[in-house]
Image (cartoon, rainbow, N blue to C red; front, side, top):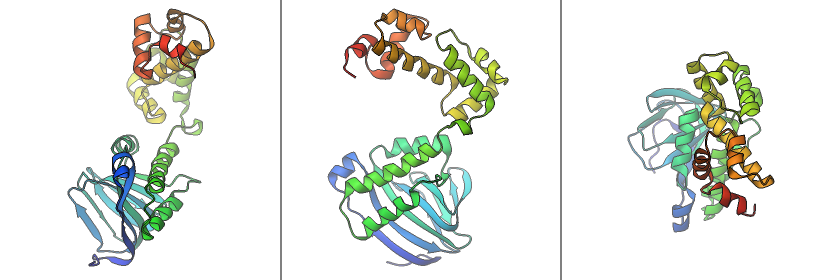
Length: 277
């Protein structure tokens, strides 16, 4: 295989032939490698039906992708949907592992990551991201046919990115914490967004944007989730009527409660109460 300009050292490329079962049901690898590169290494791609994961071991790699320019540095992970035009290139020495993958719920997961967090991520503290990349390339290098294990490693990587960037108490600002606590204490009462954002001391516009950024859901969805969670508890642990459960959980009417509950669980409150949990 002809070596591309700027590649100083290459371990791979290792190709993988996924089983039909993996293609239909799992995330699966196409190929991957470990590169050591310097200028003028550059890849410019218009379209490829796959996703591309990078783990930067040393140095930095530059990207132009979906209207943005960014760099992934040592211990950073980058994730691209190659169905969008993308360019990545070395302006200085850089060492990185990479692999293309497809399948399973990859599109939904990668779309959600991009919409919420973008395309480049610091490797989660204490995560096994580097080890997962190493495991994947090791399996590829020995031509392993273990699609289940490979799929598990991809899924772990995706989940670590979601977990690292999910809201924790330390990451949430005081205004958002106050608003969230207010909703937890008053979910059973009629609540309006203006009333909730007053607890945060912000305008409705700024409060809504900040809350969604930090909690990953808008305020109205956060409140609905609180009400539905409490409704499930009451349906399971008490003999209260459906009407009373809806009322105690802040739903304006029984019909509204039933519609919201069924949309969330695919079950009516009565059917939910009858199932063995």
